[in-house]
Length: 68
Image (cartoon, rainbow, N blue to C red; front, side, top):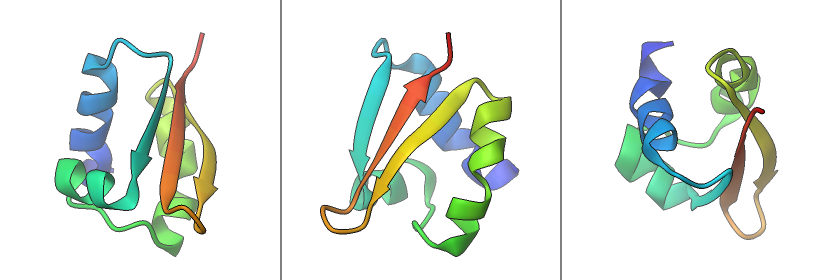
């Protein structure tokens, strides 16, 4: 999914094992809204070496973790 490549590149450059981003940060980094398409594409991040741990709609954050 070419749409999420910029976001994956950002996560790869991060030295953190877990990264929590706000919905606005995700949009600024990758131009991607957090919507049903994003939720359905969680497998893409797993293929790229990351897991979407939590999507928090109340606080408008997404937490990613680097796979070991």
